[in-house]
Image (cartoon, rainbow, N blue to C red; front, side, top):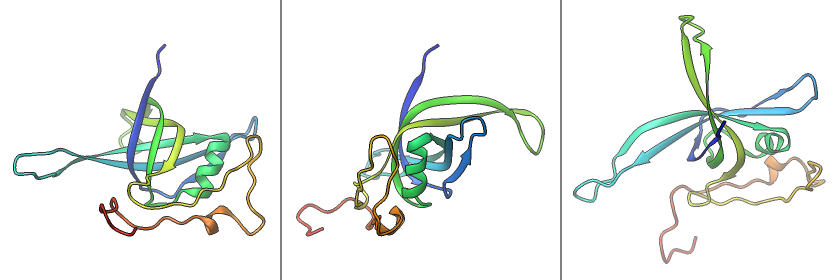
Length: 151
């Protein structure tokens, strides 16, 4: 069977939620992502198209780092494997297909702001002694910097 990989650029729509797998204690973090595309039209207009909403899953160490670093509203870039799975609709009971991305990489979109990066150990998730990473994280500004600006 083949895997389909996808890269999404968008905004985090839900606060990341952490779940723990009972058998091995591995973390699973999930969050919502909304990606809007824009197309160039006549007259140099760039109207927004429909929004693609996707559930993103991050496992183990990546999940822990996403949980510590990503907040609702953050602009992010997600790369991972794209899956569709069928599940019953909680309201109607009819079967529906739910699409999700199992993330291999997650990062802040630096074309829309700035960030401060703290390198973690390859084998262990550690943070500086001065507190959790959300106190160190800085994400500011919206939109790309203008050429010649002092940003």
